[in-house]
Length: 281
Image (cartoon, rainbow, N blue to C red; front, top):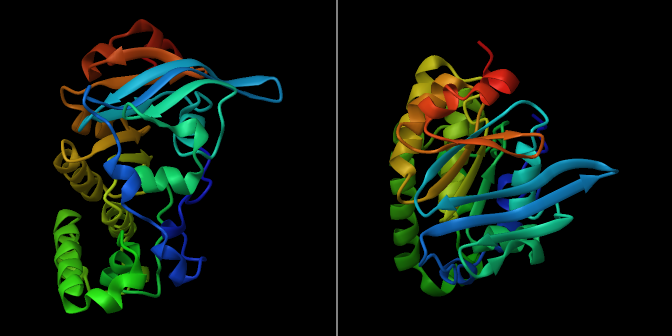
């Protein structure tokens, strides 16, 4: 899996801290999800120098759904997420967020503003800052209004940060320098930074790679607690982890840029095509 680094300003510590105030709320409030769908890809194709990386891909993600995406290397999983986040433009086809936001017409920043957050495999946090400060920097707010709103806004911000700290299991670590966290804790912190942006849809690329068994289990519990409040697309190779979070949800198998199979974990595991190209016997 290619690791391209973060796509949004907030997830890249190399940017100046002042640049993190660029995220607004307006776009996310316009997402129309009345039909129960948060993401819809229809007949999407991507061609790189004659190679069809995405081949007539059609899928949809429901509001509040946790969807697992699996498949062999080169199946198109990363390219699919690149399309959703605006990093790659499809050669043809459509990609809609809700019913009314055409992702193919927006920049990466506009898509982040609309409510889509993406996490790459490698955690990227501000290592010289505390856990609390990382979440503060990630907060979805225009910092130019802080002096005007004063203590009331600061109190609301502190409450929000406290909620996220509890959600990701880092309340006891809030004063700790991020660089001293374990690998798993850094992953949780980065997820917390995404949550501070109040995303409607989270794209998570191999989130448990390099984690201990205990961290992996805790991450599964975290994701299960987030579904319903957020929609999640989880790309993962760890089939034990997929089984933990998929439960009775839907698993999509990509192969050669299109959907090979889709269904419950049990259905996918017993599909002869999936066994042949990915799972093996």
